[in-house]
Length: 295
Length: 319
Image 1 (cartoon, rainbow over the protein chains, first blue to last red):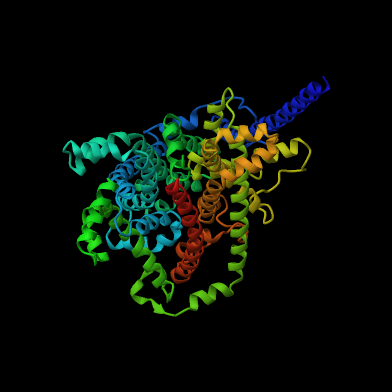
Image 2: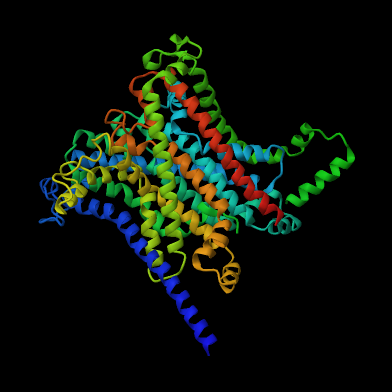
């Protein structure tokens, strides 16, 4: 009897302690959610204020007269602000898409080779590729600037696509290698026995199976290129060439008080990548961790 | 496939015992074709710049990059750097920035991963929201926080005044003492989701049986965490911390956009300082010397990164 009561009370005590952990976890999550979400909510609220309403103390927690004027201004092709913004948007879209397509084309065969073949120097090359990830952009900035000037690419989107390609490649190769490692070799062997060449086996068997990996790599390259700032800031100086991050920075260093406009522009700049991420987040999260975590 | 090539290779080795490195490379010549495009692109845009940076660091270069007129000065650029007081200020800023950002982002991310590990209603949505700061551009993040910290109309200042904690809104990013911590808060806001994603994936690999066995043996939640969960996550943690550290060490956008390194160098870190030296003051030689030093530091971090990763591989191979 007493023994049963003892275990019961011990069970209760344990349950209470676990609940304590769970509650502290919940409270922590609420705090972290506020930390994450409040800045973004404040961005949205500011973006629907008028310039006058934004510059008040104490601030209007919710605008007296919400207005979409900032968004209309940014998206209106008749307006000079809108013209610039839409051009920056288009430039970003073009550079990011071109970078994405080229990275996938170059990274797919390389990742496949690193995953399947055992040629001499394989490990060395692979780690050399990985280490590139760790180099700060600044090391490359001066020489690349000189190189781009020498081959006449300064002030062109080509300079950005070429640089984004190289800084995106190591990650792309690493992500894809993780996916190829998980595709059984036996599938290709079976295809080879059925008379396919190694290349056919690669294109017809492996490529379709690695589609999730390719999607993830593509999102990754796209987001990286879309958000890149330092090379674009250095290589481009003509207004009509700028990508969004640099364009927004240049525009608002001239109009320092237009905070609703700035917040609206920040929001619009974030929409494509956030949507892309939310739609494809399963691939994205899996790819990122594939190389670091072994299942 | 590996098996096939392995067999062929063994066969060839039987035929001629002196199969040297060259022959081995030759026999794999087709394999290199797959890697070649990647290697060529990287040679142009990586090997050449690295070589060029090292070369420039020994020269005194005139402004405007008229490189025909550069003058060889030996190690002068390096000694100039080590003698300047700005160097030590920037280095201590960089250390504080990197260590604080990395550790706090890792701890927050790990805690989120643990709290989100158990399934509950709305978990997927919550996770997606928490990752968003990491996806959006650092430029957008910098502007959002610059507005939040604004010395006249910033929301934090307004809240502090409203609660009676301050007489007037504090100057977060215009004052020497608060600027670096304020920027670190922004940086952590952007980076903890990365740690969270990595650690969530890591947590999924912790075997459930072990946790249940520990529970049966009477281990409480804290003991289970210390003796079962955490040891399993050692490799993921190492990789995550190293990647965060390198990213923080190399960060540029947040300090550059929010403060440009000011006030009076209080938020200059290495990268922003190098950028200003090169493209602001056109002192290409000194900037290159800085870059070479930076390169050596990052490479030594890279050594640990590779070791942690190949530790993973080796364990994987033996299983």
